[in-house]
Length: 287
Image 1 (cartoon, rainbow, N blue to C red):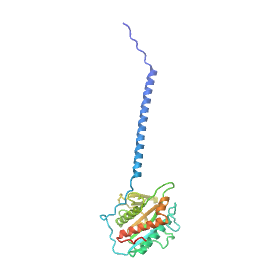
Image 2 (tube, rainbow, N blue to C red):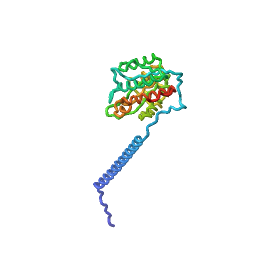
Image 3 (cartoon, one colour):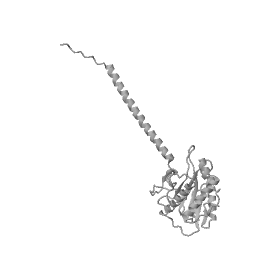
Image 4 (cartoon, rainbow, N blue to C red):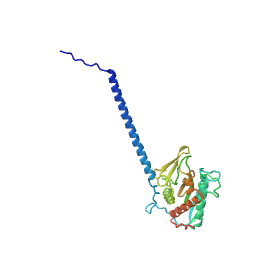
């Protein structure tokens, strides 16, 4: 019988086939990774577009159903603190922080001085006087205020476009926390009404000082009682207190709207109306 002959296996051909298969697998893997990356990039762009077009978050509500402070009868003693000043310029940018705080405090004090419902108090005799936060807190406490507002300006690193308003009430667990938080909501709502962008959750946040003087910012939904201190003006004065950051001195548009001469006057009026709303008095009419 004839013997069948098999063609000997071609090892070189087998290696080629295996190599081709491996290359196809690598190509499929690369295409899959590329598709996943493109999907992630598309989702990122979609999310960014949503955030860009999303309406600004409204100020936290201060409705009739919420906590309301017990204020007694007028006249009310209100302490106004202009942050920094004298040899301490504060943050520097388009303008110096101390210029913004002094101009706003001066305009606000003028409103309070004209209103018989209020006795305006200052944390130092002159805005040009250099005084530490501890010294200003002690000066305020000595006058027995019923409310304190410390006015500041914000800043960001070079190249940042950060802007907007935020304020810091006495933190949870402090005696005057609820009253301070109530006043902070009024301030944020007023600033939003004149076009300020509210930072964080409705423009109201908390600050804590950690070791090495590092600050930790948390949103107002964080209500845990902590031992770390907040700003000195909020901790060392025995009354409801809020520290405001009315604009970024490093942002041209922010300064033009809320840190210029006219901008500071507009913000001072908002602060005055918030004080009136806190105590339940009718603000003086605009001239």
